[in-house]
Image 1 (cartoon, rainbow over the protein chains, first blue to last red):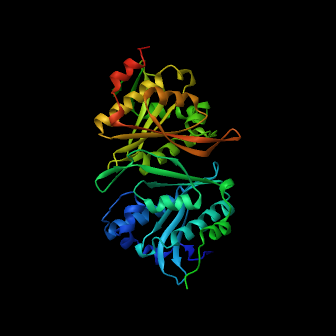
Image 2: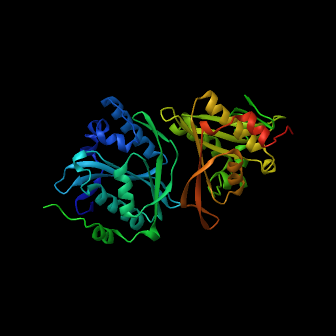
Image 3: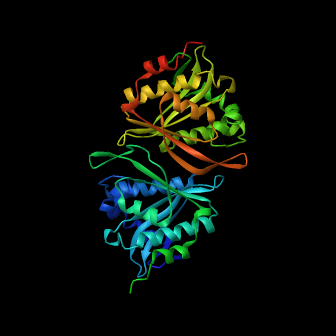
Length: 192
Length: 190
């Protein structure tokens, strides 16, 4: 378990997968899937879970964590995928599925844990992620946490009836002051 | 078959797979694979290719082989990771025979696949990734009218140094069509 201030990262177990059907049909999906609104049936979710397990068995190196609050409520999924041991980089994926936990520092707390884990445990030297230009919450977060905007794939996604640019952000290990420094800087505090 | 001036694009099949053990182990793989230097045994190549071919990324798209006008296989070109919702596709190409570099063969193939993606598949965005060390592709992108959209800092480790990866994109609105590009680049039959 990776212990944060507001959340802990734990193995992504059945407790989390049981919520996926609900999560993948909720408002969080729109932001996670760059404008996707999937209307996924339970059978589709099961088959996606199956595919994911098979992919993992094949070649794509990845680590998935469940995000839970300090009282153990599962609220999302954070992970590193497409880990490339030669180029020592990985792509972050971050999904706080429960909207009542948006804007409260929960996602940022999880992100700090994940970045520390990527650099200090996996020995990566670069992490990056992709979001869309509609996602103002992530854009603010990237700036706060110190990711650099590295790319803007133009009109990369179709979201709610319009073409929206993608945004890619990257962070190198040299630029990372460590989780403790950022918890301080951002003033993250445990909820009473 | 998509007929160009210097090359034709045909479905990727056995005649290309027969050359692949050489192409996967020579200098071309360094450029096509972000600084990679693989040592792939001949007998592993076909199996690895089939694995890749069955991946969702390959299956969503179209895999071409590149033939010269006299029928010699010189490389491959794939339109991968096609999203029909976002109407976008990712290009990947490799000219496996170094004596066909810098002669317009790759560019001729690129013009064919761009036209095919926009006019036949009705995509509206194409993109590709290369490393900053690849001056040949950087020049080609400028010539063909792709826009540099991103720079993934230090994303490629090649021959002992870290290089940025460059991301290029092209939208259908920006594409004057293959005929115009042939004219502009004055590509001529061999």
